[in-house]
Image 1 (cartoon, rainbow, N blue to C red):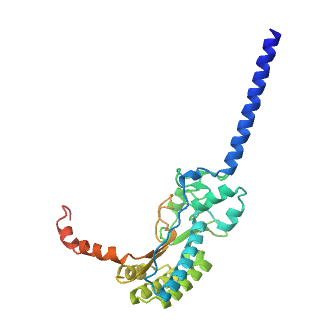
Image 2: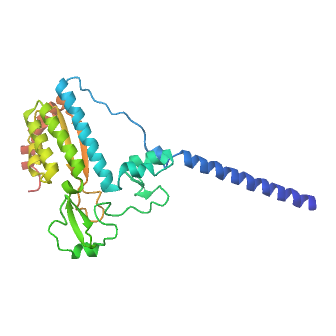
Image 3: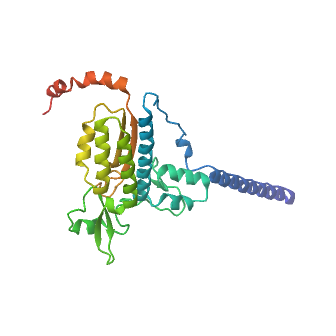
Length: 276
């Protein structure tokens, strides 16, 4: 009986040791593997630019630099200073995952935090003070509070105030504006050069209507860019604030010509819709 008890105790001890080893290995594996990194795959996006002139290729470089600036601003709007935040994450895998997600919240898992101590993402991201309530905002009388292009901050007395984007992100938008103006000088399409010039000024004033209209009027440009504060879904609190973004695009001329055939039927299709 004593011998049997000893064997049971020995087996139990071995089982505990085995479980501890497994837990240690699992912990090591988690430290090596970023949070659900399997949801992402590295992909090299390329485009044929052989039909572009040397000036247009130089212009592309300026547009990509301007787009990178928008990326930096979006970090500030979403989670804070990119370089400072990523440097605080010691685990290389988690640091890469945070870089992909623009912060410590998983965009493909209902914004669940994956960095210890990060806590839930503020509904209003960085567009509003963290300690601001909806009730406080709604009771606040300010004509610019719901503008797409203002941040809400607190002044020295703790009162709410609005700061226009071109002031809040001044060094960034000034840099992007210069890059767009330099790109405009390299643009061979007159309408695209006009759009870039107007957009460069819009970044410094937060007056986007004229450049938006110029973008809609372009027809023959081989290169395109969508840049500035546009979508408002990052503002989960009210949906008022537009976040900065950028897309650099190469137009597929062959498919554009094919689609133009269908576009010619749009007026007729609109009159046949069963609604006004």
